Every structure is written in C-alpha cells, then in structure tokens.
Length: 389
Length: 139
Ligand SMILES: [Zn+2]
Image (cartoon, each protein chain N blue to C red):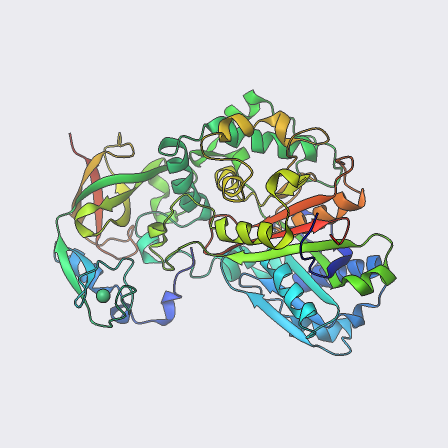
C-alpha cells in the first residue's frame, strides 16, 4: 500500500462532551486539561510525559501554559500553525509529525478547546481582526457570508448542484443519529426539513452551517516504533500536509484565485504522493465541514470527485456508512457531532480505524482527515491501520 | 479571511488608505505598480510581479461585473440588522486587472456576470464611518 510511511502513530485520544456554545460548566483550559488527561489515559502514559504541544489558528491555550498544570517533565516542542479557523487542524498533526521525526519531541499532543464563556474564543480569539473595514463597511462580518460568496459561485458559475450540499448535510445528520454523543442526535434531516430550514446567508441554510460548541479534544502521537509498545491498536499516520493554493492574504480576501478552491489541491497532492495511496483507496473521510459548500470544494480538490461529476457522486447513499462509496464524517462531523474547529474529526478517524465508531465501516484501513476548506491555509492527514510497510 | 488587526493602526497609515480617501472624493482608486504597471489588489507594500516598493494609485470607472453574490438573512452586522435580508455583490473590475470589490447591492436582481455600476455613498454610522460604493444592476 504505502511507499514511505511516516513512522508516526496515534496512541491516545480524548474528548469531552459537546456543550452548547457558552454552556460549558468548565473553563476552557480545564476542559482542555481533561481532554489531554483522557488521551493520556487512553495511551497508558502519565500526562506529564507529553513533551510536545501543537495547535493552530489563534489558539490562546499555548503549550507553555499547559505545562504547569500537566506537570510536564520536559517541554521540548510548542508550536502553532498560522492561518484562520480550522485550516491548520490537520496541519497541527503535520507539525507533530515533524517534531517527532526530527527528534525534537517524543510524545506530542495535538488539541483544540473552546469554551466561549471563559475565553470569548469565537468573539475575540478567533474572530479578532478576521474581517476588516472592507467587509464591515458593507455589512459583511462572518464566515457564513464570506463562504456563502464562494458557495454561490460554486453553484451558479461552476455548476455544482445544490443537491450535493444537501447530501453532505444529510449524511452528517444520519451518522449523528447513531452517535449518542452527537449534538445533532435525533434530527431526521429529510429533504423537506432541509429545504424548509431558514436561510442564514443565501445560498446557505441553517442545516448547511456548523455551530461552534464548547468542548475539547486531544490526540497524542509518538513514533510508530514506540506506539507498538504502548498500545495494541496504534493508528498510523501515513502522510500529512499543509497547503495554500495561491491565496492573497488580506482583508479583501475575495481576490483569492482559484476563488472556489478549498486551498487543498497542493496539500492533497502531497498526501497522495507521500503515501502512495490514491483517493479511490480511501475508506472514509473525516471532512471538515464549516459549511457544506466549502466541503464540496474540498472533496473536489482532494481528488474524490470533479466539478463535473460532483452532482452524480455526492449523493446521500454514497456518503454514508457502512456501504457508501465514500462515507464522510462518520461521527456526525462538524455539522452534527459537534464543531470544535475540526479536532473532533481527528478523534473520529482514530475511532473508525480502531473499530470504535458509532458508524463503522467494515474493514476500513485508510481514513483521511481534512482541515479548514477555503481558509488561507488548509491541511490534510491520512491515517491507516497498518504502517504501510 | 484574516486581516490586519486594525485597531492598533492609525487609519491613515494603512496600506489601502488612498482607496478610502478616494471614495470620499468620489473617485475609485486601485493600487498599481509604478514600475511594471501590474495592478496590485488587495493593496500591499511590495509588487509581487517585479519586487518594487514603488506602488501608486489609479482612478478607474466604477463599473464591473458580478463575480459572486449573497443574500444575508441573519443579522450578523448590527448596523445592517434593519436591512435584512440584504444583498452583497463581489464586483470584478476588468479595467483594473480583475480586482474584486465587495459592496452592497441596491435594487436586487443581479446574477453572476451581470454588469453593475457603483454609486459613491458618504460615510455613515452604518458603514463603520467609511465612504463606500453601492452597486446597482445596469439595465
Ligand atoms: Zn511591479
């Protein structure tokens, strides 16, 4: 299967319950510490043994601030992937890989926590400076609007049928229906329910949109060699990549070209080249779905379909476990399990490959995780049940 | 979508300050490299084409074509809340190297590819204290 395994594996995952935004009983750092503790317990190591910390996108929970309460014995790595929103969510995994393979660190945690009431994350940490005067002066000040502009062109100019967006939303809610921990559990997203849901920003409806939750998630990576001693079910990282396909940084961000791209073409290409895997080999994708339109762009850019056949390929039947051609977001994903800037997707990838998902894909060996479509920078990480040798 | 953190920067020192002062004077100005003549948008300090730091501004006619559009129903921006649902268009300016500007569409009815014309509107509380262009479909 593989050409060049990275030699890095996930040994532990930890995730807290998803709370409605602003409703977490715990402060943000407390939530995060609990998630890291859970991941360490899952890996069978003391949390103080973690020596590397990786996060992304304006995180205020710096590794150096976690070292105190975790009792970190030796902090060897602490880094942030720049770029807005969840663009770096899989990129933080790439950074962990770099730290481990270069020998800078041995046991690295990748994480995200959000608790609006204690950090004001969405209002301050994440949104601060995102939309400047060019936007605000014209009544535009939210990701839904900026991504709505790209989605409209995707539909009206590129010819993507709106049914593709609906299929993504329905697949996510279908999977959430079998995941008792999902915030979208119990929502039967029929065609009628979807079509009659209110507009947020045309062409995006309520059910096309993720809503941030209070929660925390963490995954712990180490060398594949050491992983085999720690756990009988390591999940191997086959490749990871960070990319930015020609964006022009700035608040007149609407001048990106290609405009409707997810900015994942180059990252996707490098993941396939490094791993020797092709999109058709992949058993499931934990797809970053901030809104359904950018998710379509991501699937095109990562090579799972083309703009021409997206309408034909992106159907509910194709996108669900266990039998779809490409099950996506098997826990319910950002739309329906809970939105944690993409970190829930990495956790679900590990669960799926360990056979612990609420929506198993029988015999699944390869699972891709994508990060943040249509942000300045996007990322991808490919996980596998074997090390590819 | 990340912009500069504007609050710390005196507005007149922004790289795009001439754009805003142009609008206040009834002129649409787009940045252009003085050395290689390449249009530079969004405005920045260095020409990506030739590396020059000598960038000027040129006035162009406020007409363009709709590159994309949205209709906002949720009142994300308090100053615009009384207008919901309202339309925004992203307008491409072929006469300025394809620079794209976002603005409010008045009168509705514009689709991608339609020709629109800009109207200079004075600064107000709604527009965050900035002069703006609003756009209408040309019949
Ligand atoms: Zn130049």
